[in-house]
Image (tube, rainbow, N blue to C red; front, side, top):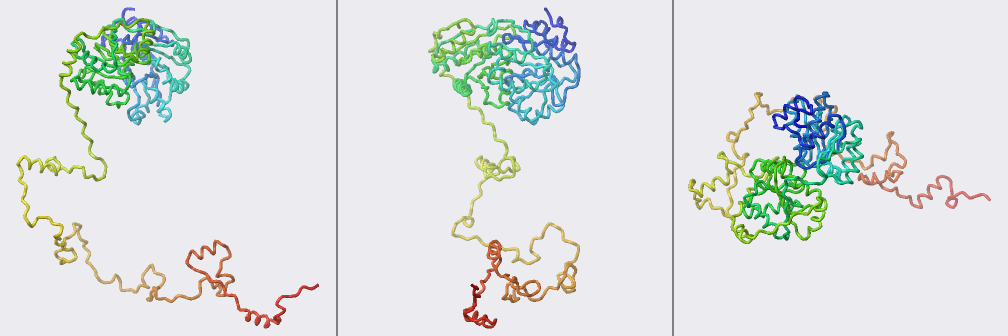
Length: 575
């Protein structure tokens, strides 16, 4: 197959390929596109930089153009999963480039690190192609902001990492939500045997396409290896970056803090670099890649986050400051150079503690990495390196203006000139523009001198008091009584109010509970029967008095009046 025209793609795609300058398909494209157009599942293995993105993008867009229909609400027709945000963004850009002449083509890219509310709004009306990372896609599924019941094509780029232990749990949640009748495409540069067995759960009678043997590097990459102590790696890297043959370079570290540390040490010897890793925000990562692509910065320090599918042109050298502990990552790292049939150099710095990692990499590649000797003039280059001036410290971003209604003493109050009122006068005084006023003896502030008391408003004459800005009413002021009628005859009063105040009214000695409604004494009215009643009465302040027991003489007199003797107080029991 000699040209893309032999693939019988849709006319908008042929026109976009001609504008992009793509005339001849790569081996992976020539073998994968015809079978993908037939709707077959594909497992594709090819080296990095061989055009795998176009191998699954072109047949997918051809399917969308041929079987035209509206995108499902809160859904998509094609789902592309990528392991990193940068790779997902790059795939979305490629899809838009190839489908630039397809009318009404909607492409959405969702990943973490950005507000999810915007992405939810983007998904409401549906999209033809959805590029996503597994983590954010699961978040949207949990919020029920997206449905996957109408997916027609599933694509997994960098399938080995997607199906690794870090993503296998996410895939097991996503795959069951997809329809069984779908097309699945897997593409990667490396594919371990265990991952290959696991992929059988998601593929249906796939076609295996392997342009080159698995886990092989690009042919035009020249590999080099230096055995150096960990403490000397920084000096060797600085000397190597100052070489004239080194153009755009990419340095890989194993940890995030290690990447920031390398950037700071390079700045001390006058070499400008920028770091990209997982601790950076999405905006910082995008700005770093833009500066690197535009040429503002020629050295990028990165972790393995940038080793997966990122296509940055004209990278001449890749430095493995720390070789990876996963051998497959080495293949992806050095694949950032020698892309699109160009040449490149990959350099590895190996410490004694990394001997096991080196052995695993050589076992995976099936060859030994060529060992290089240290430069003969290393001592002279180190002297020149130490004589270089350090880069100026980067300017710290200015803090945002204080928001909200809170007050702060640090908040500057600005004058008409735009300067803080406290700072503008002091600066002008230093420059001699404003003379500092002389303070007289009377203006001296002494703690024992009392300030004269300000005259109160009530002490002033009524004509001298300040008037309110509110206009007065036109009605004449009436200082007299409101009405001549007595209070009892006014409306809304049922009873005339007594002249005597309630405070002067004498209280009754009897409690209110002593009488019933009929005016007769109430039985047991002073003592509530229940415990709650007694407690409530005691709490209310109405202390009840216990009825006094009559004396013995009074009880005897009472019995005698009733015709009973004193000795017969109790009736005798008859035998």
